[in-house]
Length: 443
Image 1: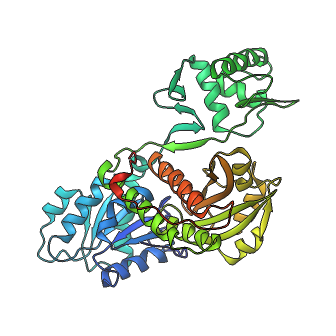
Image 2: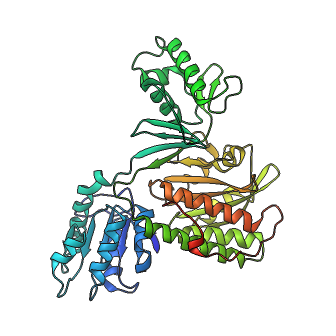
Image 3: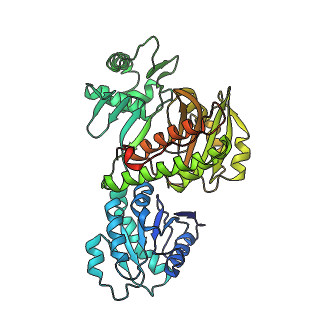
């Protein structure tokens, strides 16, 4: 898999930039049709992911959430087989672009292709057909947040249910709306003038006493001690804050088959164990971890940090610019406004669905100078025997959120990395014998 981003250029078909990458699939990396199509998309400034490994098609289509999949036809049954595999993994529009040769159109359409663009068209006409297909599918492709997750607290926005440690918590409609408003703005101090109109639809002044009563009820039902709150904090002279990091998880309109994605998770985890076992020291293991996460399509850029006292030291990075490495420097303070430091301090994941200045302003300051600029980020603490020893930051150039499956895999990968590289003793351990079928992964 190769990901690239082109430079935006005006065209007779107008300006259009998809919110997710375009996945271009060909039988081989040197296919002239694939190379030409990739060049045309990059000229338009579209982010492109290239895949020609047929065993990884389902995995790539599942974890990258493409705006569209462009398949370059090849000989034999390859094209129909590729479209069939991709359709099982994503609901994104699939467009066959190029000469079908003696192949009939009907088998491709039955396999799941949405459109066929013949060879011989100009670059603008080809992309105009692709653009029209992407626009028609844009609404159905939009990954909406369904779950809000903060440690053991799980909220299902669609079913309007709440659970803690998988035990249901019964909330009234208003209590649920209040909780979700706080969680959507986690770690921000929100004044009553912000909260009340969004929950009750009345003025902040009129609903102040009501807000206090409902905050008290909400804490009681969540088991949150008002004297030492873990979830809902009172902020003096401001209002209230949901203090625990929250991860937003989307729902799939058409999820990939559990078997294909689950098996790929196992293969990736087995590959990571083998690669880490061959590392000679912590620095080499960190670089291996960063490279493996990018290789697995789980990030476009990765930074690996190790905890040293009150500092986080940058051990390795992949996909980030020299400017970023220089700005991060050899280490960052745990007291600074960095998302990575916050993940270490709280021991929980920190998600930036959109990279903005608040509340991790130092992270924003460094990332806003990147080209292309990351639009989403996830920072995961690395633990060894319950002790936080580092952090891994994953950046994406598109706004696609991590799914429940990919989050589960990333947590498992961080646990494997922390244990095998043993950041506390600065040495790498010998990998155990790992067989894919010996690990249970929920897909």
